Length: 450
Image (tube, rainbow, N blue to C red; front, side):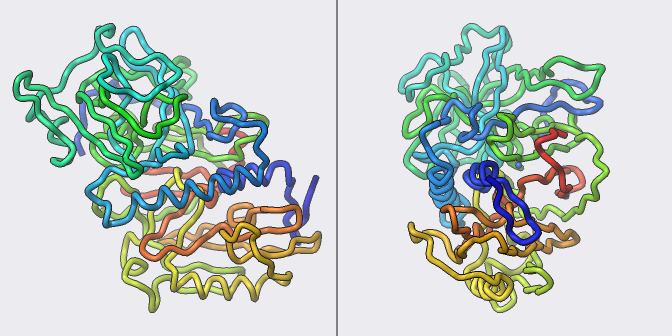
């Protein structure tokens, strides 16, 4: 069934799942493989996609949207400064947003992990388990891999961990890690080197998965909490020295991209591209990445937001969190976009002026403002003015249909932190250049994987 919002025609059957998750739908350099000419890619599978092992066909699109809302609220806690000494992840009780497959070891063992732009160290559950959460896939057994190597205390990989997260086994001279998560989940184990096999190469000269020896990861022997039983751990895609993208930096020239689409788009997956993405005819716009602590997160500077033609300066007269460089984090693991509360009041007023529709209340009391939807509804384009880059968001990036005749704004207020979430990034090729310290946005039909 098609709904028309002014000149924006949207298929409800597609929009609702999109809003559910995309939202509805990331330096130490260790020796790895040679440079890959044209990069390589891997599928990103949204938890609510029909391709996901967590897919529940009994859930309605509305159910999925509100579940995504709750995950966003849980996830934002780990970005808050008061939790800077803790390792927060989207692996709360409700799980992460995107899964990806990699293979570890020799012979290779397939691992399904949560792709997390807000985490650095990749870790998986390993045998022998002192304490492990139940997982359906087989546990990785380092004793059966010919390429597994322990990391010694005092080595570069060990020292790359925060001092509060590393432990030295003096008796065996073995480096260990210990992470705690926001919901009291935890993982502890050995820091090790191993061969990773990832994706398929884009170049016609390399048509098989690409292998990288001696990547640092965590082999978790004691793990517990609320982890999903379909996955084996976390694949860290953050900006810190032990993340997968940082370890592969020389091979991929410091570049990676993703293109997020509706999870039910013909049962296709989104794409994560390591290296240079396919050239696009569309015009891209680029903004600098800002160096801030912790280095895990991808900070950029938001200067203003326009609702249609009305431009609102961001941070003017607002709390200190909204001012200065690096005032917003780009995160593919958070569904909603969060903005500073005082600014949000001005944004909400501008929306009411621009949308000539009856204002109504979200029946669950979570989202505001909401409007009564009809065939003549005209929703505005909302432009995020980053430093040097204007990113125009279409209505499907900023509004969700939460009932048959109701749409709600999916950008929400936050008291102390701003996040540019994955719904706002849908149908853009989002490209990170960690050498040039920039991120670019290219309008892209992500159902036609780049």
